Length: 194
Image 1: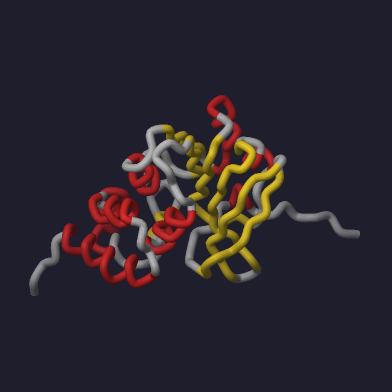
Image 2: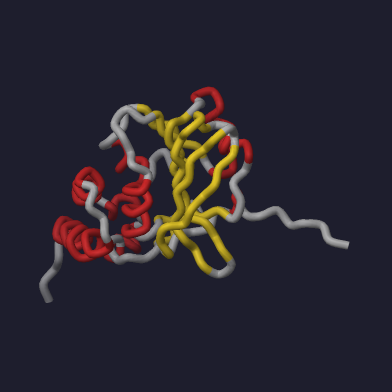
């Protein structure tokens, strides 16, 4: 049996998964074609790092499927001069991709988005996961007119969505059904009912 190199798997991911799913942004294709996805997963999952599925990480977080990540980044319309907040891991795969494009990247965990307050306002907020509800503390970190991309949970379906912040409010519009891991910190708060 022939062994396939990680470089070949990366090239195949770009050609067979990303391009065929409508990913056309050159910077996204280049970054994801160059960054070793296998370096961001546990050793036991390295051989499956390029399959289009979520991978559970040792710290309890999840590496989302490559297609979901690429479509989210493409929808974000990331510009080199954007001041970006990534709700995700500072040493994670999405942060590594973004660092190839922007100079001003701040990372915060979903559990502690207020830690980015001192660097606000942001022109772009990227949430590496799916939310049922966005906390106002997060939206308050955005500049007026800022773009925000995230996964959203609608019933049993997860979708990718994009929105713009206007006067402290955001309206999200979904653009693609896609597998993306839910973020417990962004779960809808239970409502008290009599």
